[in-house]
Length: 336
Image (cartoon, rainbow, N blue to C red):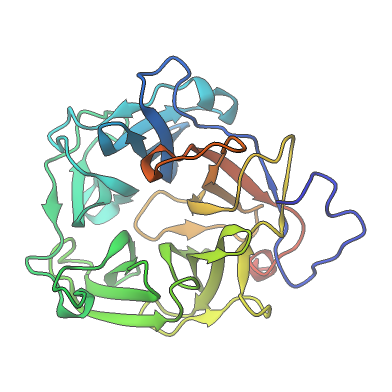
């Protein structure tokens, strides 16, 4: 990653430039042994606080947890509370997405438990309130089945327009998928599951997230990719959630955030920019971001000790925020 002074004398008028914080959400220093990492964040600002849902990596496996705080300076001290004591229960849970579904006046937590699942709550601030998991699908769509017959899908993302809701996801193997249902039927009725983009495994890998760019007719999709300098995000736009996706930037890999355009305040702690989420301007199902304000992206960074080897679940993922600096392809969409 770039050092704090890496931008001196450089110019990237067509793309993005970012500045990263230090780790802001980490396993607690006095936590139980075997709490290795925090990953896959989803964030909303509601009722004067940030509410963050994340994947925990512990010696017991993967789970989903919650933390909240009024200001980023308080994030490191905020308790991380597992959701296994809620009706949602224990077991494999990962990659959460949280949003308020206004038509039903309910909070939704979308996550993977092998297949795409959801829980609901009327109180986002109560980690014991999340309902038992329910599946989005009764049967696995044929298009996501691998040659061995097992499903290949992960990192599920919901976004709605005025009429329909869409479920986007990836497969760690070069495919980006979409399913749809009506706003009235949600969360039931997902159908027409189709592959909307495909490429090399390394180029369309996982962790897709899609947003409405407020005040415009445009949508933004980010997908994590694998590069020579670690994980990074690519960006596409469309004028419809049901439409085709076109690269946002003219560079060959339509880069959103990577080792080449992020500099650090303080030490360079992360190898790459991995699974994360934009800090939205609303908390509802439209997933809106404001192009007129500096973009911020809460991401998982890999803060490894040099020379140390790790099992996958032991990788020391921490959460930090990158903030866009200067004009960029999204800020140029701000209505004048």
